[in-house]
Image (cartoon, rainbow, N blue to C red):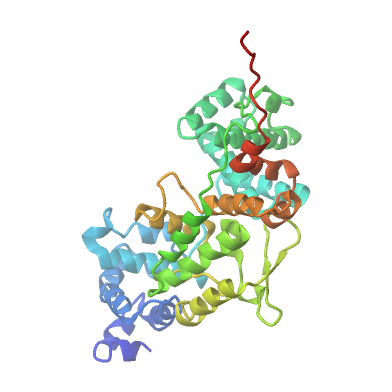
Length: 408
């Protein structure tokens, strides 16, 4: 494989003292990640320089070197040496998959977070995304308190003043709704620490939460004609256009969340019975929905003509190398890219507005709140009732006449 890419100079790479024994497998791994031949050759050109730098640092074998040590060999600005930077980043991912790199030393804060994560997973049974959010807030608190500098002192000195200072620092970059989630995560973490005797009992009840009022904000919904025009304007002559059209058509047709679109797998598309099994991270059971002809045609067009030929089972993959499945954030970024191009009003920050637009459209078509709530995955009818306030036509019909007094 290496000889096919570099027929004249392949021996130059395989003869490198440190990296020569990994070159063949490294090239094969790059190809499985969807890298074209030219980017692979450009990375190979930087191999001798990287091998020389490692030997000057006294490295005798790659086994035992950490990812941080390798990343230190890249320039501060990747544009100063583009190919070396790309080589090091790719090499770190490759060596990590092979188990060659040494693990990072576990810090005291990392040990606390690991125990907290195990508690949330085993005792409370939280979903993976919720675990990440809770542990992120706990890690931010320990970093703010500089816990790793004096772990021996523990957290016994933690009091309302330090917590208030942490929330004030977080409130600079968070809105009230996000700060309310942070407070909830913080209270859970403090209760966990109190159960282990590391902080005082009742410290979680000393935290006040920002006030949010039910119905103070309306969901952002677009006219259904605008949604149809947005989908029709997507250029489906490119692989990215075919992928984005299929993703956003799924959201506009079924009201899926970005996490549900990203988690969709090839085996979830049950073509023979014309239905889709949608995994729902927030619920214990998947959602079974019929596969419409329009959605089926868009998925077939993407899978046959635009989806990279990689071994991943997720339906939607990245277009550019390195190949891999899209995450929920990538789905949002693809939508925001369409908004920046002027496809939708700038107030639409994410594809959730397509979900809201579908709810209002179904409501205007006469669908029941129960059917809309089941499709959107709402646990409470109150979550669906918010769309009633967007049904302006019916609200006008239900309005009472203004009282007036006849003049004598």
